[in-house]
Structure formats: structure tokens, C-alpha cells
Image (cartoon, rainbow, N blue to C red; front, top):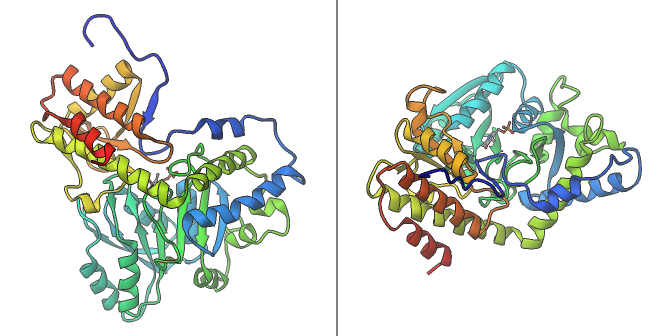
Length: 402
Ligand SMILES: *Cc1c(COP(=O)(O)O)cnc(C)c1O
């Protein structure tokens, strides 16, 4: 910004792919004294969360709530279904699949990683071949990240189910929907997912601190066949509590539960189909601008094919050091924070400064996304970064749906 004018005062905007923007309704619901955790309102309210969580995940099955982030939910899913020496297949389209595989390795589970890089979705032929080669059924689970937040690739979870069925393979299908739940369409039962993990700070719009593991009857059976299980991660008492504290393995995350109640009210008042349609429209608005900028100059979307892009997050490359410069400029001058690149280059290496990401998950609407895009356009101009013309016009056209 030339001269001494700084226009960053006002409400700031955190446009990173988690934690996401927290709605005022959620913040207000959490602003209260500690409730009684033994009886009364909190206990009754918590019971109402379960059916509404199921509706978001599109499942009739069970859900366990953990005081954890997504990493905790990853570990919980593994602890309840597998034991040391078991093997899992991990098709990877980015850093988060590798992270889940590393979590399994830490538990003594063997991992067979099919790495499709940072730009491609799962290759179903290679997955089919890996399943067919496993004639002894040593693979006990397939760990699939629905939307990999590092690459912004969205994978086809239903196709993974078909691959397992076509191979006649009994492995459990486990899905990481931490980035996608409440943003990109996901149908746990319709797509035949056995275990789904998510967390509260992305599409669910609550401050970080709760993880969720959804599981069906097949997964519950795998849990019962284990010789022993970590008391804390055991999903059985959490999903079927006789006492309130069993929901959480101890003290309830009191304020997060009130925040989640408010967030679920918002999601279901809008409707799942409408929530997904809103994310799709806003994602297309962002893509229209990014594609226009990219027609001239260094900006490139990580996923060229629209059909493979998530509606929750967009990963971009602009070349080092422009990615970091753009992020810093927007934060300091406009009060707008974009996400860092993840998994594309070693942390803080020279190349690392060439990447950034946009989060558009949860509590986002048209004027926020137009503000985000207008901010980026301003930053490109202020930093004299070459870019194609007409991005904001293209975005407005996409947003208007004409
Ligand atoms: C954010 C995210 C995680 C990790 O969640 P944390 O809450 O940071 O532990 C895992 N997988 C995906 C796909 C994510 O987007």
C-alpha cells in the first residue's frame, strides 16, 4: 500500500484451511459459566448431538466423541480396529494420507503406501492390483483421505468401496473426512464406509478440541475381536455410555459441546444439500478467479482438473518467495490471512515460500469469498506480480451462477 495508509483495521479474516471461521452463534453459545457435568441441561443437550452428528455424516451408525484434534481421531480409529503386526493399505494424494500412515506405523502397524503424489487422485487400477495381490488378506484396513488438505485433491471414496467389493476383499474402509465433512458431499452409509474420522474445527465451525469417530457394525466387530484396547481411545463406552462421563473418558468438553450444538443447528437449518451446494458455488467462484489470474503470470492451481478439486480448500503455487510475500502483505495490510503451503516442499526451504492455500470451509458466504479474492487481486497489484486480467469479473459471474 503506497504511502502511510494502512487499511488492516476492522474485522480480520482467517482464510486458512482450518481452523475455520467461527460463527458468532457458536462463540455466543460457548460464552457461559461452567455447567454441572453430572446432571441437568448439559447431559440432556449432549444426547441431542448424536443424531444430528449422524445426519451430517449421513449414517445410521455409531459415533464416539473425543477431546482431541484430528490426529487423536486418526489414532482412535486405528486403536479400535487394528493391532501391532496388522497391515493397512494407504493410497496417498498428499501429506495427510502420509500423516495417517505414520500414525499407524507408530502403533506397530505395517503400512503399504501407494503414493500418487501431490497432483493426482487415487489410481483405482493400482489400488485394485494391490488388493488382488493380497491373496492372504493381510491388509486389514484401507485408510483413505477424502480431501487431502495439503493438495486440495478430492478422492472418490465410493470407488474405493467398489474396488474392495470387486476384489472380494474384507478389509475395513476407513475415511478421513476432517477437511471435507460439512463441505464436500460425503455419504458414509451410501458409500459403504466402515469408519470415518473427523474433527470439529473445519466444516463443523467449532474451535479445535473435539475429534469424532463414526463406525458401523463391521468395525464394531473388529473392535470386539481385539485382545486388548487402550482405555482412553476405546470407542465402546463412548458410543454406549451408561454414565455421562463415559462419553468423553472423563470430564466433558463442556463449552465445545455448546458450540457444537449451535453449529449443528446452523447446518441443519440450512440443510446438508444446501450446505454442499453453497460450498460448490463458492469454490467455483474461487476457481474462476484463480484460473483467470493464471492465464498470465506465475499463479497456478495445484489441481488442474475441476472434477478432482475439493470444495473446501484450494492449493496454489506462485513461486518462491512470492507465496510468502503475498501472504505477509495481505495479513499486514488488509487483515486477511491465507494458509501456508503444506507438504509441497520441505518446511521453510527456499521452495516452501512458493506455495499457499485458501480455506473455504464452513462459515463462508459470497461476500467473504469476493472479499478474499479482491484482497488477493490487490496484493498481486501491490507486489507487482504479473497476473491475468478479469479475475474478479469471472468470479462475480461464477458466483451469480450466470
Ligand atoms: C486438518 C486435517 C487433519 C489433522 O487434523 P488436526 O486437527 O490438525 O489434528 C487430518 N486430515 C485432514 C484431511 C485434515 O484436513
